Length: 129
Image 1 (cartoon, rainbow, N blue to C red):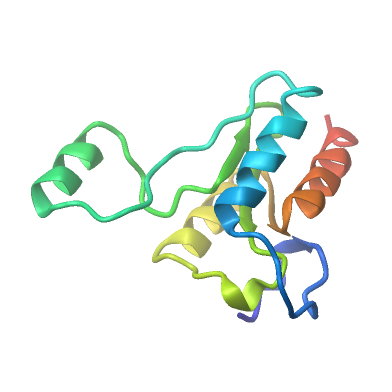
Image 2 (cartoon, rainbow, N blue to C red):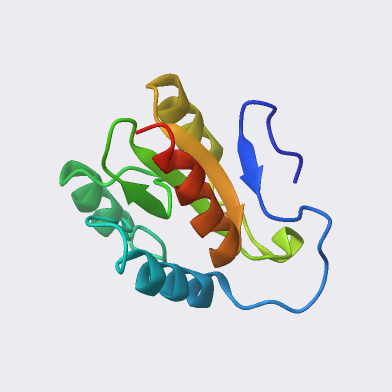
């Protein structure tokens, strides 16, 4: 994927090879970040659902394309976590739009290629707080 110029990418975009799944990267990230950071969350909106389920979840506040990692703050940290080899990751509809909207609202927005890159992004974000 070609990343938009406004979107900061953490990690090696040229890496190709074996790497953990996004889920494994996410579990590791949240295990690490909870040692250091109070509130960090993942809005679960992946997976298949029926049309009725989609309508109900949207009515309840689900937002298509919501990022994988959100840490409230000033600014808010918003990060889409992908595999270290980002060519093995799939971008879902509206993910870039969600990130762009958050960026326009003043959030610290990024893409991290693997959990270590996400932790690096958090360290940089802390400098803005």
